[in-house]
Length: 523
Image (cartoon, rainbow, N blue to C red; front, side, top):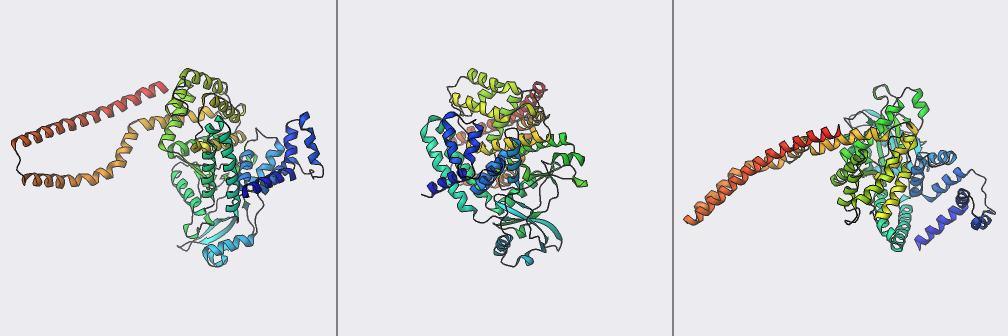
């Protein structure tokens, strides 16, 4: 019943804000839909269409606001008036009462807000779908006063999100049961992924830990600033972090007037994304302009500033290696290898013909090489790849949904910064170097270093274990035959050890030779 009521409420909001009229206008009002115009009688549709769409998404709740945030980064797909209005969803969702924010803080820390903070600004500086932010000052345990940003969870979010997810799960079940395409798309697994990430976003301690991890990962890169977390002031509903001062990334003219190299900024963004994805397997997955700024401070001029770490994506070693091989083969236009990788990974049925899949992938991808970003629509590429995936029964991978969403965000940001950016040539050297690091001696030495603590613990115990074995053997009568068997086994063991040593040396030499051959082939 609750799902049906929520569905009815969504339909009512669509009707109230005239979103059906937007759809009819975009379709050019076919003859068989003209009768639907009657539904517009009595409704107030005077507000601009972009404003009505934004207000409808705000009324429908956080899931729909996030959908609007993703759309707002794709100005190439939207009319300018709608894109401008949806941009307000990035950090200008209507705030909730400051009294509620203060009550949340005092409930979390069990003391008045003026005792928690040296200064707390009552007026919020930003408000989004899940939380809003106030500036303030805290005194650390060392007695130092620091400027901070205080993020407070928006009240009543869990019931709304649970209702929307329940409705999505019901619809996903319908889609999965209606057709073979529905099963291939795995809609219920995709909804389960969104369920996990959205519930994670409601725990600000988890978000703070995400920020701390990203800060460690990015510490030596000198491309991005991640705020420091003040753990003494963090709670499931309140998070306190270092106040960051920057310019929103979508204010391109302001950045250009300040002297920021916009082309370099765009290239750094690509490097930053691929580093987080392939080096760390831990990436910021909510990269709309409201969460990305650029520093103009003298010591960090031109660096990115990342904010809002409620949604991060993670990849396993297998996912990273598979994606990197696909990207590398794609950048080299080795479509046969891309097809082979799809079959090897089980994403397509094993009986699929490599040459047919190779030809289909080539037809989709080849027209987009050697073009600047302004002439490429990743959305169009994905749509054509989706059509190809239907033909070859490619299974959707739910664990990569966040990565696909982030790729769309990255393309939208890159298009705003530098339409002339060559996405392929910027990403190709990074991925090729990453692949070399994965199969070269560096990888071997890293694995040996990681396993060294186990070896270090085992080696001191070997003499004791050997002595115990000899003592145990000396207390029992051993026949000549048994002794001969033991000696024969010892000789086998010695030969096995020699083989392992020689094999290990040969393996290392083979790796060195393989890396040399790959470098020759690549460059």
